[in-house]
Amino acid sequence: MRSQSEPTVILDSTGGRGRELPARTSMPARLGRYELSHELGKGAMGVVYRGRDPRINREVAIKAILLADEFDPEDLEQARASFFREAEMAGRLSHPHIVTIYDAGEDGGTAYIAMELLRGQHLVDYTSPTQRLPTAVAIEIVARLADALHYAHQNQVVHRDIKPANIMFDAPSGELKITDFGIARLTDSGRTRTGVVLGTPSFMSPEQLQGRPVTGRSDLFSLAVSLYQLLTGQLPFRGDTMPGLMIKIAQEPHPRICAINPALRPGLDEFFDRALAKDPAGRYDSGASFAQALRDLNLPDQR
Image (cartoon, rainbow, N blue to C red):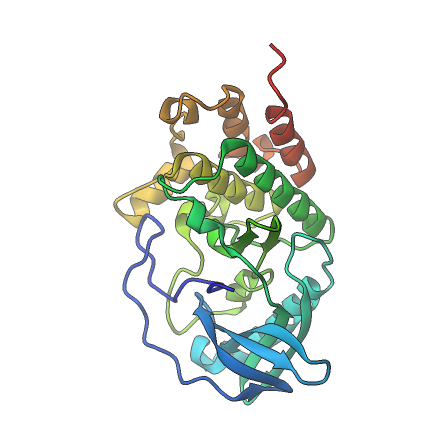
């Protein structure tokens, strides 16, 4: 399994990597009953380890967050309560395209989530202009992700940080999983010590960047940005500064995708006009309708 998440960084205006934060402490030998073997990767909040549950001899991935390092003292209890509440909500989700949560706990001030160990690589590996998936494959993958989000939203769970780096894809088996449900919501618990914008601004909806309440339609906006990047190798909104990027996301239209890649089906422009609407009310109303629109575009040309 490849690294599950990118290192903690101060994000630049294009959602790329900026200055990395100080390295965390060394890996513990175990968390709760779980034996840890090695680090898989760092994310905007926490570290992911490969581990084993000795009770049933199952290999797992362990997401560990040292709460005292992430949150100011006055916010710590709220953060702890939020962590377990969100872990419980994510743990209730059971869908073939959502990572399975097995357990959550705390050990010596470190909160952790035990989850299934995934195969494959981040979908971000397929966003390079030189390593893109075939158009029909990319569209079907995103339709399947929209189905998963529809299920999560029906269960009152909004992801809040949908992007290719939070999606694992194993090409040989076709296995596809959304990871990090509930982690982005933890940032609402209070002020972090790092002061980092947790998430990737280029994938955020206008309402999320503006600090307004978000719904499932915000996740679908982020999913549409992800599809745009998979199909073109570039993001629909880019800026040299964070304020400039926010203005583009909130006010300016995205470049027409068929002007970037004329080989794409013309119907994709209409799809993105709706999926990337500035007003949430103008977007697809559910993951199911988002997925159906994509599958209609993927039908063989009848002309």
